[in-house]
Length: 70
Image 1 (cartoon, rainbow, N blue to C red):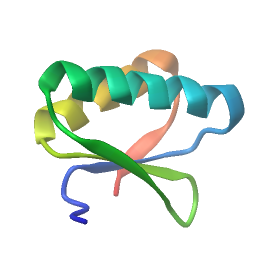
Image 2: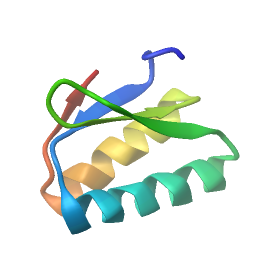
Image 3: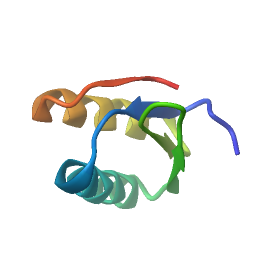
Image 4: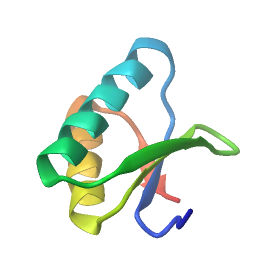
């Protein structure tokens, strides 16, 4: 699994569930795959293309949730 198009998000509970839903919606709209993985601190969200990753980063910003490259 490539970590090229991944973001690490620090969220838990309902916020994490919300982000999973958003990631699924974005990936489905772009017809790409996505997955999550445990990170040292937080959850890693990975996408098959960079445009979906960028859209997810904007979603995190809009929701006030911290994310970083990873």
